[in-house]
Length: 459
Image 1 (cartoon, rainbow, N blue to C red):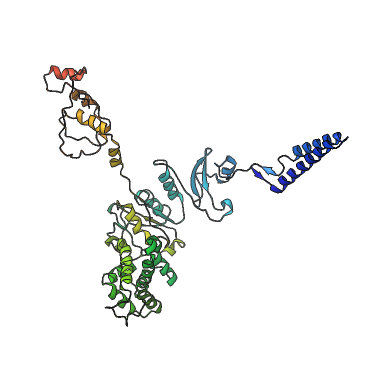
Image 2 (image 1 turned 180 degrees about the vertical axis):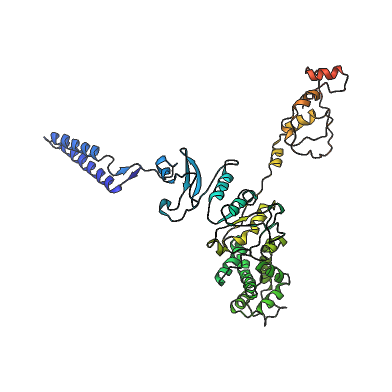
């Protein structure tokens, strides 16, 4: 409930005046009728002004879209290539169109849902219909296999795929051979401000907490390395990787030989001295510089892998070409470590992009850990008389039937995982009493004289 305070205070004041005059009139001799009149006036004012200036308003106005609100976004199957499909609402196909909500651009979208709810299907449908340029973060490679050929042959776009973990040939692209194109994200940095911003994003001083001073000092050295690669026309990451391998002193002296004032100033800021006149055997803040140098080289190690260096050794396309000709780039990786794969793509993103924290899940180990101790004990005792090896798969251990061998031959669940070896454990005999199995299969086995377990163990 939202209250208009001036009207509320005015109403309270009017009621108070009427009640006060009515109370005074009751105590005056011969003025009782006036008291009733004033009391009636006060009640009338209260009834008339009750709720004046107040209206019901919820704290937040977010809600599910109504049919009238969805109507401007209804589209058909022959929709424009500049629309983004959202799904179905009220039995109609809904898409976001340019100009919605008074904006020229389409805006941003967030699709949230549990597994197998259609998130990847939505992205696939939009990639098959979207006619503009696109950058697809597709770590598994599913969207690339499903949409790359269509976008290249039917939509007439240039298609590139970048896989830092798999690059063999940059002249041709074959999905079956896991080939990758090349892209040097540092090649289009046109000013010193952009170079320093990229160096700051890679070293990320905010992630060091109280030790951010080391990364802040190391930014000058990385800026000098990127600047030198641009001046010499060399790929940035291979050039910086080679220079850092020579050591701290050679890195500074070799870069200082390049006749560029911003580069030399960055080296002087890093050393806090002129490298030509510095006594390298007695550096005043040698420990601080050693920590700054270690901070830079450590954070760049995940970019110095052979695959990443090959991917960034050149550029098969430029980011500026996205506005000139429709182009699609798929960022894919066959690296099972998704955290490392996200770090490999960090130079391709904005300088301020933080490190991804995606952790791969392991369903089989989680399911195995949920198996209770009593369930494992029952499975072990029921498997004791079986001719197959022990232990069963973790999945099958949950639903092993505690029946005889002949009964289990037709109802045994198939195991999807290979049985793992276990340590030999001494256990006491689980058979405490004997019970005859009445199943037809066991009866036929007993009549044939075969050796089969006639008892069933209980844990």
